[in-house]
Length: 71
Image 1 (cartoon, rainbow, N blue to C red):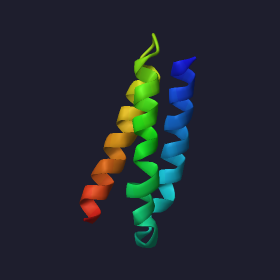
Image 2 (tube, one colour):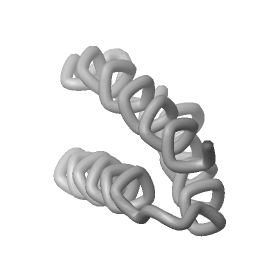
Image 3 (tube, one colour):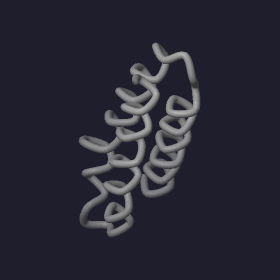
Image 4 (cartoon, rainbow, N blue to C red):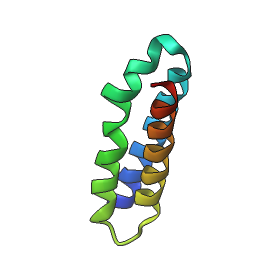
């Protein structure tokens, strides 16, 4: 169950990260979108299967790199 929740959180945060490509919405990335995959990583860590956790890690790394590029 935790794996499915982690996948859903990862998908939602990946979809929410798409509009942050616009410079005006870049602040959303740091304040709202980056904490979501962290929650998914924690939830996925308690699951037996690790694919949801790994997807959240991927989304977090991509969002973090995008944030570093714009700073």
